[in-house]
Length: 307
Image (cartoon, rainbow, N blue to C red; front, side, top):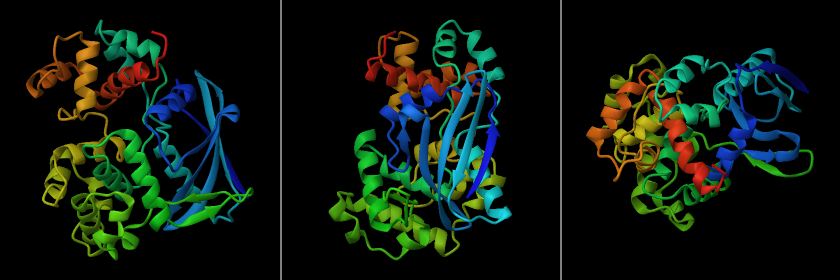
């Protein structure tokens, strides 16, 4: 048994995290609402490790604890904690974001309403890319269904004390050996199956070094990934936001962001890309995070939250 307590950067809202998961389901995360806890498999040095995470404290004095029944070396424990800190944006200081949002009369109410909301990031860039490809041009619920089917087909399973199976996201080498026909019965389109397998093979054969992306700027990352089939600007932007946690991206092709901008700024029609860039210019250097709060406005309406 290994365990650790992590102090989170305040404010941190586990409630907002859970509410976002209602409209943005993640089949890898198993939530126990009444205990403010969740379970998830993390891949540490290619080893799947099931961890239980419990959020403690309050909005302005937050912390989380993690534990696992797996026997971990000191290096593995440190690796697991690094994954958890990254995934739950534990060290992001939101104070500059809120100062920026408070200066905009349209954004200030969002900063107050969603205070403590952070990104729940993918802990692996291959996973982030595959999930984003899966999500191209389909709704969030069906994307989660396809992701779950892929987990069950190719992910490594870990059993908890109650006998429930939890799945690690498939490593690239487990997908690289597949043919598109293996994914078609799961309701993957032919093209989407090809794109995912092509990406996995590019990673396995060394044509794409995903870990090397951490040392690159946004333009270099875009130039590295967009030559791959099925990977355009929106896909790479989403990977940089939801996988890398880059704080200043504005995915102007995103329909949800268009809808959110129209709602927040009370526009007569969906903004085009030029208008989105004009509005988003004042969000720098926090455009990813302001986008999150704008997206969450749409999510709150879908959940029929009282406004």
